[in-house]
Amino acid sequence: MSTVTPLAVTVAGTVFQNPLLLAAGTADYGQTLDGVIDIDALGGLVTKAVSVEPRTGNRAPRVAEFSGGMINAVGLANPGVEVVDRDKLPWLSHRLTRARVLVNVIGNSVADFASVIETLDHHDIITGYELNVSCPNVKAGGLEFGADADALHALVTRARAATRRTLFVKLSPTLPRIGETASAAVAAGADGITVINTIPGLVIDVDRRAPKIGFGSGGVSGPGLLPVGVLATWRVRNAVNVPIIGVGGVSSADDALQYLMAGASLVGMGTAAMRDPRAALRVIRGLNDWCAKHRIPSITDIIGTLEWPA
Image (cartoon, rainbow, N blue to C red; front, side, top):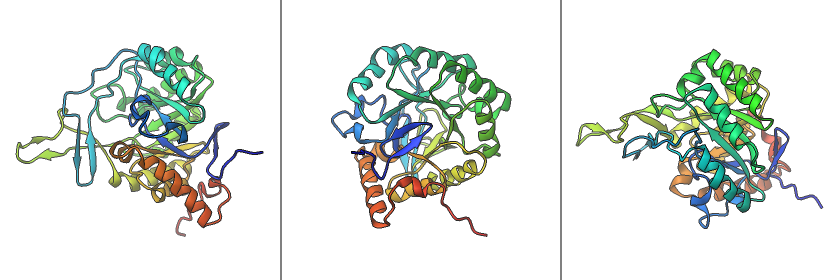
């Protein structure tokens, strides 16, 4: 008997039981949500960033809410690849049987990205990697790679040589020609594109006349990011014919459906899941209900079905 459900999607040859992922940083490396939700019921999760050396991140406070969402400048804090290799991925290997795992990779150089992949690639639990080439929350190690065509090509080419697993490249919404950048990433060997990362912003504490977070500026996320991410997804879908992970502002099944209709095969949830981890499972139930209501036999039938005005 087939176990394929209406929400199953096949991405780069791998079946995801549903299209809902927890976005990078949302679930740490999985352990923080153990016992809170059944993480194995998700389509998958993208791990917190992994770098060659441990990173302490930015000074506190690192996160602040405002009326439109959240601003953060965590600074890609992580324990480093050795700890992830020794402790984090083995835990996931023993905990998960159905949910897929993508590892978010960061670095200060092209070689760093390849080094992280080479160190971790022996773990069978890894479905693929998400190359974070666009982070507005750090002084180095992100933004320049996505914004520079030569650097992006070198980074993706080197990462491609390090693994046969699926490679997603995560792009910034501030790129002036995001479709062209996506095409360049695919030409260099990327299997898919993630859009979008957070948008640079500033939230001020008016009583102190100072930024609300210790780094000053940070990355804006939350509901206001949804239309930006959906548009970026549609633009990338019209530029490249590869799987897309749509991320930004997702808090409901309706939000996820917008990304799917714009061309995403998978949808990441971040800020909403940080506020309430159970929101991810509600989105999955909502997608199931929507498919049943509209008599959609497979969620894949709606991917890329947006009808643009003539």
